[in-house]
Length: 415
Image (cartoon, rainbow, N blue to C red; front, side, top):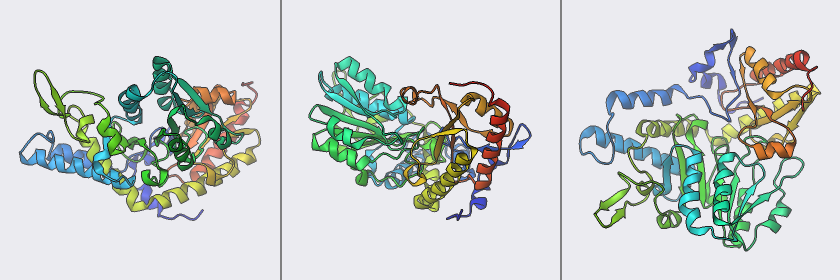
């Protein structure tokens, strides 16, 4: 595999990768759940608390002004990262889940009426499933499912039939956290807009790994989390078109989201602060800006090239194991760096436990995608997911440990 950047130099920025688990060198392959954090991001957190810890937007003293400048600078960086027309369209939330719920409650309760349809795919994470299910039940609307082809792609011929005059919103993942499928967002956006509907994109898996332009995707809302892309936990982003956000009522009320408050009337603040009530997660937003700097320095094209090569290597290795079922697209170029798989006779939880004994961290279970698991006719899967610091040597360790797991547990029946 040809690296487009010096991976060994990159790994030096992640001290946690030197940790030993059960006496073995850590091999971290659970990046779809959360990525590791480089020392530059940790240093930014420490610097904030050591030098200018103060509330922002409201103070006129030096530390408050420094914090405000750093906080809003992070917003500018994130806006540029996703090719947003304006930084004021970037709303900070706690995570992707909150960002999607914000749209469901603030936009959805205004616009989804009895008889309307919300279209989602059959591979959505619960965060982009349950809010729409609840909203449709409450509003007597219909939740419509875009089904998948045998190789885990959205059936676009069916999509053209299902997205129609009754559709008010299409809500789809940019990249599946189980199958690795990369969704044809622009095609779906054009189908939605053709019928006067909006499209929301769950970018939790896509934004960390793909060049993501909201202009090129032609989406109306885009949600993602920084903890999956080198940043700290507790920071999510909702991007929305300014005209949509301006027409939406606040999701939460309180301090900082107001312009003025009287006994009889409250005037809301301008974007983006209308949706950021209370003291925000200042330190983690600032550190998230540093995470964006790190990815920009690598280049998202290089990130993608590295993951395609690593995923291709892993898929070919898994194929040689024989008794392994791999879910999702066959080609690495058609998927992200996420591989879900099962042995026919080994429970995924047992696989995960055996691998942990070798210091290898993967995820096992339903991955917050229970409807998809039902479609696949499994209880769950084992999932290995890659990021910028993973290597072919680590994939080799994974494959060797899987051979051992199959030997030890292959006699146990699993369905």
